[in-house]
Image 1: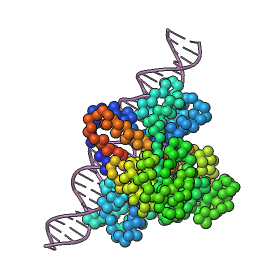
Image 2: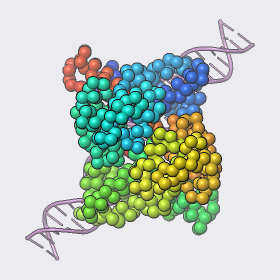
Image 3: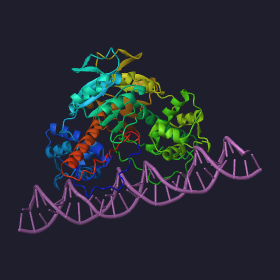
Length: 253
Length: 253
DNA sequence: AGCCGCTTGTGAAGACACGCACAAAGTTGC
DNA sequence: GCAACTTTGTGCGTGTCTTCACAAGCGGCT
């Protein structure tokens, strides 16, 4: 919280990390491009233009090119991007070449599903540790991984070099679990519990809030309803004006 | 896509919908405030200041007040907000008073978890219809709801007045399912499949992409790694500069 | 070999969101 | 009834993200 926005401390000049500083919003989209590139590669394509890739991923072509420019990608003008090298460059930029090790805490309904979710393993994020507090769950295997007791978090995370933690516990348990992950050295956490986690500044938390997603949709349903009524009852009849946010977003744009 | 950003068409003057036009980002946060208000109400609190509510939800107090101002909320200066009325106002603004009916398509790993997810029912989003294409799943009950075949989407959605659809199918099946939901009159869709859905302009799609979330975290892990190395190897030793985005965000901010 | 058409990379303008800081408004205490 | 304190509501400067539009560069065709 209140992460000090880097108080004008620009360290002499870039040189360090990826290139300069990639905007959060761009990082999210880069991940989407990467997945699409994999798909295209599987289909045997060799090159792709910003236009094509943009349409396939649902973004503006100019935005896509700017995103790619952050990682210093070089396409060839007049042709497009070669898929193989671009894919490689994206994987490197997104940290896919260093194998990440993921721990998942909370093997309830949602956690169980996430543990078995092919989308993770398939894209290079092996879940290597599972934890729960329920004695009935501790000891069972899911996808070949044994569920350990939450109290083992420090030991197991250290042993398996966990770098990313997923919290899929009920709300009240989340903060405690989070503290344990942090003290085990985990610096990146994906939180599905509907609470705001308190963490030190150097820890990054992303929150996925399913109930909020539904509520956002409900809001637009209600808005549409009101608009429709308004134009039916009183007004001109200028047509409902299919305005609609269609925000492929949330994560993206 | 390319939703025309309302080409300066300001319809004479507001009057219609909620008040004027609530920014997307604010809507997401309003949903969070609402949940916290419910929690506070349960604990017996009567009033809450913007400061308290802001801390509890992890946002800036000024931002919170501005968000509330969009729905025309009136707190009392010197005191704060009365929880009960504010909660009511939020529920109305977010479309919680009109009962929404949710259909979930794809009762695999993830879908099964979502169907049983308490976070939905608990906040007024009853899942009233389940669909799958797998004959082994069609007919079973989850939380008292019978899984129907995907081909029944039009009939069942009409009968149960479904307004929101959740797609939790594998990627390749998503577009087809989406088309069916749209033709059944569903105008708001929450998509967990890793594909970009093509929909008419008046349909709103929100995408939740779990693999992308992990990839974003992995990016920051890699960045930290590089920074740490850079400062260990060559440089001054000015300290790693615990910069770190901590973007409680994704959905929110 | 030179020209033409296509596609990239990016400067600059616009839109949006954030957060400060302060006036307005209410409450409590004397 | 007045003064001091508290907290809301919001105008405005700032920074970030998005989008347009165009120059620069590359390949293919004649």
